[in-house]
Image 1 (cartoon, rainbow, N blue to C red):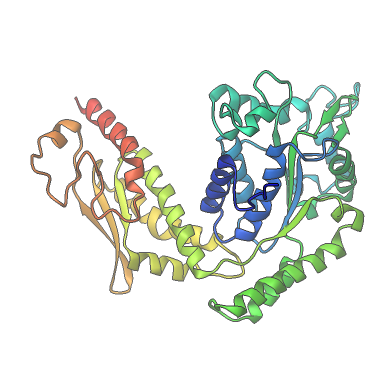
Image 2 (tube, rainbow, N blue to C red; image 1 turned 120 degrees about the vertical axis):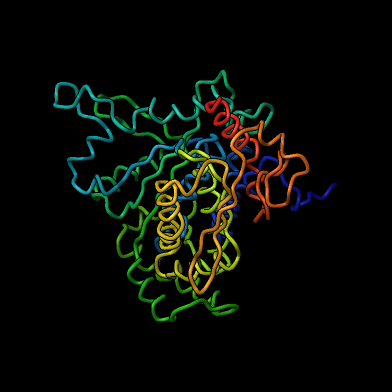
Length: 409
């Protein structure tokens, strides 16, 4: 008899976990739980009478709960927006729930298709198969065998964001959806959620968690204190959730995951992601240019963007205010032109922006001869490549510069 190896993993499952951990920083426990659930999904051993996966994400604000859903949609369908989002703030009054289910025939709004109509749930899967994007369209994979292109079954992701702000009537509606996987619309059509991944996010307990975080003091602790703080956060979140939601509601989920606070090294990783996004935006702006930020400048940005109670959102605001806004002024004043390399450094306790003039066409690039270190080459459009991000966008940069050169001609 052969012993099975617990460490052996499916290649598609490994890529799923790797991508999720790359995008959702500082939440390995949440990603491990999601990966285990995804394993049950692609193996086909899940309960066929219930939704594929039902999860509730709890935790402080700005730690990646909604970002996890976006990363999940990007991994499965190849598009970060390929999920049906129900913003529960819009359903704080009971009469607004008709927008989800539709009105009966003959009533006002009866001709409008509701948000939870079957075709609305299925469209993201169909578009991914049509465009051949995401894990769901990979030929021969376990996920594509579970949902073959010629089948009428479509995988869907449904997010109920900030569920605590919805009217309790919506909670009662979800009781049936989470348990039986179906719901009946106002026109008596039945919607099948048994091929759906249903995720709810909540900020319940954020005040209690914020008070606890404030008591820990300013800055970041390390070691055992981090573990204790995360455990206290989990306990505070669950206590508050039990006060707000009925027991039978909480008991419907496959998993309830509490997200932890972000530590300093997590913020540096998130900053690299934000800088990478600014790189792509810089290549699509009116004057395409390349951008690099030194380590000392990154440390200043992280220092200014650190607020343990609010997660990564303050850091994103700091990047917009300290990097993007000054660059926009330099572009408007024509100090930044297409092909320039902009370096952001720290000098005298503040950020300084320096420019190295680059090329504006491929003809000029070809005529540079022996390429100086301070200029770009066709193989590496950035100098002093910081983190390797620019190497990943060489082809995109080349297309932008080539287009710009053609326009000049």
